[in-house]
Image (tube, rainbow, N blue to C red; front, side, top):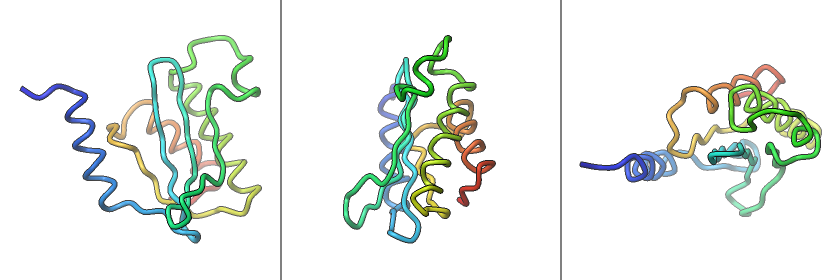
Length: 119
C-alpha cells in the first residue's frame, strides 16, 4: 500500500515533466506545510525566482488565525498576483506541486486569477 507522501511525490514528478517556466510564461509554484502556504513565480530557464509570497510576509503574518487555511491561501494568491503584475508578469503556468487541485491550492489559484494573472 502506498502512503500519501509517496503518491504526492509521484504526482509531482508527473506534473513537472510537463510544466516548465519560460521568461514569457514563468511557473507559479505552490508549497503548503502544516502551518504556512508559500508561492513563487520562477523562470526555469535561468533558475531564478522572480517574486514570492507566503503567510510569513509582513502583510499577512500580523493577521490573527490559522495561516494554513483557505482564507489565508486567498490572501497569498492576491499578494503574489499583485507582486507579479508590478514586475510585469501577466501570463503564468501553474505548478500545483503534486497537491490535488482542491481546497487551499484551488483558493490560491482562483485569487491569483481574479487579481489579473492568466493561467
